[in-house]
Image 1 (tube, rainbow, N blue to C red):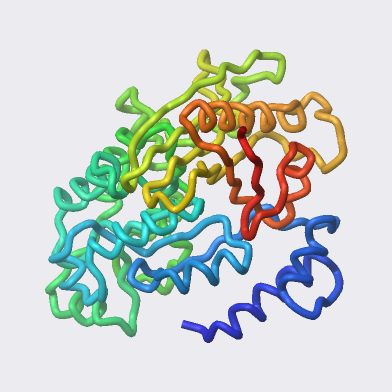
Image 2: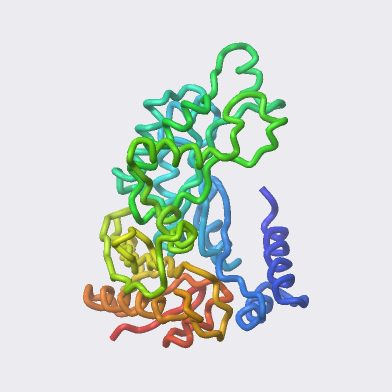
Length: 366
């Protein structure tokens, strides 16, 4: 991809834009952004699993990354080899563990309908994502395969050697996938936003997610991913009020040879999610620390320094979730908690007793 020097220049210029002024280097731009009017609360890098080595990881953390998205496509070595992907499932496993132990959030890009795959293989791959604890990403983007000109796939399709998913195939597939998504996963996106005139074959419907939800409703079923349960979307359906009392919940699961905790505030009566934290006990034994990979409170955005104004944000739920992480980590024998913080959110953690330690915000637990 782009040279490292260009990558750093590009990220620095993004921070300069948020800061409203130029800085000499990326560290200076980070420092300014901690108190800027427009703060960076999260930075995502997208890459391939086979490229995400320690050098790439260190560079990403240097940039201020909080999330990494991997182009996984399918968990099937034969299909990956057939489309000349250049990596296999082993690389996905390794990159996932490397990113998770660094405290990054993890998103997989999945592509059902690839040449050499079948409906059954694709569904099996999605099932394996969450049954096999070597994977278990925090988030998904699902892009059914599309045929566009200028590709080997286009040539294969014109020769009659490939048939893409129909709308019915895609809707049925994704309905089955959504039924099995754990409540700690967020489906960020379904379907690539490619102009329909460029799609030669495949699903041309840009509102595929709506069609999937309609099918689920007709089957008296629903998706329980984070996006479908977050309080903002529930409010839009007229189901929630900020007068309700949230309940603290915890889900514990294994992932990448370590232990994960999904700690959340929810309204169980309407299955609404208000906020959550992702706490990890890492697998690499590199230090006696636990990691908070994410802390997020949903609802109407409230500006920094303002009261809640009747909204869910700025009511102390984030602090309460963080304290719960501290108690769980301390009770399990860890003497330090590290938080992967967006550059612009460091001040928030300082106010809660955390100090800067390398790429993280840190607090001793003893």
